[in-house]
Length: 619
Image 1: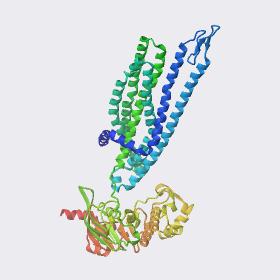
Image 2: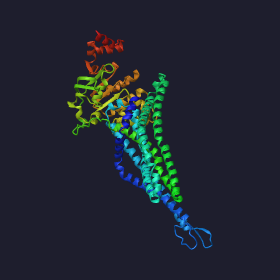
Image 3: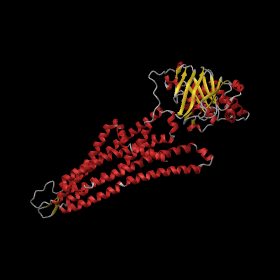
């Protein structure tokens, strides 16, 4: 996917900016992180002191006291008065006990540092998921039109988890590594400065290797995170449409498409791991040369015991460089995840409600007026132009027209799911932009073609319309929607648990439940978008009866392709290409013998209105 790769390459250039921003995210955790750093430093210092104690131990082993010489705490062996070789157990246990205590204390401090880091990382993940959730709530629908659900899902789960999971390694290993490097070098200088300089000679080569490898591998880490999101999107999309895939026998095509994306993911992962994996063997090779150098120089200056201690020092000195490949891997992966998270958090939000926005829906009557409304999803392709319409409170308005005419867009503009480019939409002679969005939407009930029910009881789904509704309200709404009898036949009745999307009941029953949910919310305005298009004739009649009941004395907008369901609407507007081409009631529009009549005849007589329209335009 070239476009995606270019995007990831461009983002890789902002590595430093993203890293700084991520560090700022932990501002509230600075105290705990400082404690973690101090604990890591303490653990490293104790690790560094261990070879120093061992050096004293070995030095004492070389200083064998002859008979008559004083035996000190630094004397490990001595010759007693009987000329027998003896051990100074006080010196032995003092040094041995000190070593054990140092190792234990170092391990305990490291465990405590890691425990606190896990606490910080879990709290970071919790806060970041909240930030993402709150951001999604503030994003316009246009964002979800252009971004696959799988990408968004991946950001909220995989990317946050990746940062949280790896934070422990970054903080603890980095602090531990820096402290070990500096502390060990100081200890080496204090022990034998010539050998310390030999060990230091390997440092410039290691730094150059790390910089070069990191520069090239970061692009691949970013590409990997983007390909992972792409794969998640395809999995979500494929399983959501699994029945359609099977219906058209497209399993092979889907498998091929999946394998292509999966291969891209594997290639990006392979390249990133290959490049970053070069760090360990190359730095290890350089460090082995340092061992050889210390052995040669140590032999020349005749310091065998010091040389043994220096081999231990060098192992500690080199450990950060052996870990550096892993740390670089982790940091690059974490920053790549951070870039994806910030790409979401930096998305443009819908405008805030004015401070003095109207918040009382009790005064809303439901009169609408569209004045010179202009709207387009993309600047180069306007959808609704110079749209004018006046609807009195309590009127039922049906909106008909061919696919793409702008019918659903119009009701989305009423709900302010999208903002108009110019013009005004007035509700009771007040611009809808002067209402709080929440107030406007609380006053509107929607019944859509695509019913949305979540996993939970029927009662929980119905109370989604108004969580303060009583059980009597719920039962009454279900009776009005003609769904009460069906619910009473279910095991558990109103406590019957629906599957995700309500797949364990029929489409018509789901539709009736959404109507009952709308009734419970007691809306001032109703919007019905293809509410009867996916059900059988008998269920359609039940739904239509329920809709007729809830539309009484409410301003209602009805979108329907089945023109038989809108014949009783007070006003029918016919839209084509974002314009109103006809208005009137059912009888008036049939009498005009225009576009509406053609649509109506196409359903009941078989005439294709679009064919007629195309022929007329050609002539």
